[in-house]
Length: 284
Figure 1 (cartoon, rainbow, N blue to C red):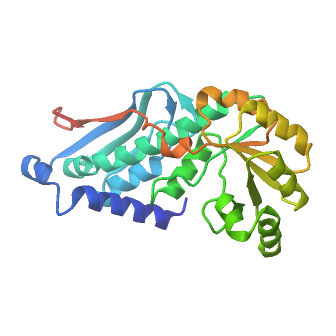
Figure 2: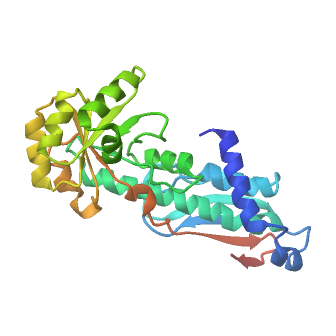
Figure 3: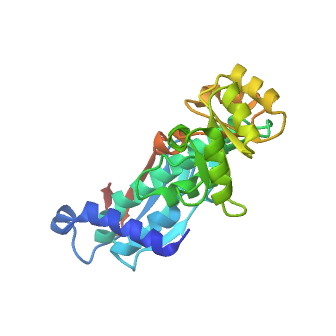
């Protein structure tokens, strides 16, 4: 993860939350008060985002100490995740931003892990999409990898994916693929969206190396796999949920892309309980 990018993301999140100052904490907590606390995982899943959580606390006050209590990218049922200590004001002010980032990224990693578990043994690779939270794409795609899935293209700049509107604007699949093949740098992914057998044949004839099979049923996917017969890589996409994932994976496709990994992943349930050093408790 690019550390400069991480710092900018966290700074923007803190600016949004703290604004001109944490008026509640400033009004109620003495400036010299110190505290310690533990972030705990309260639901099964994969923890990811500790860098972001630690950065949030440390941007509020560089004197905050952080001790990791868990390895990222590992499925666990529950338990302590991160211990923090330092000025009580800093811990309270950074708490929500740290938990928001850690919960969101852990939720994405957990969704990826559930998807990977669902297709275990089939040989299918689970991919994410560009359906990410604006400004958080790099973090969310890193969370997908932490959960055991793989990244599709990062953005519009690093792969060619010819979709139906490109095809319409270009004058057909053959014209679009020919232009894309001529323009693609060596090694860049070139993929074409197809919706039926006729479009599959046209894309194959044009030399497309990967086909995106859009919104097809398992029966249609099996027929597409047989039709292509290894002449191109195949990716299934469109409306695929966790409950139907195994059936899609067993059709013989190479990849399944899931927008839900990022656009619909629920945050992992985490909480932070603070204990003042004078044995007082500050509940978050």
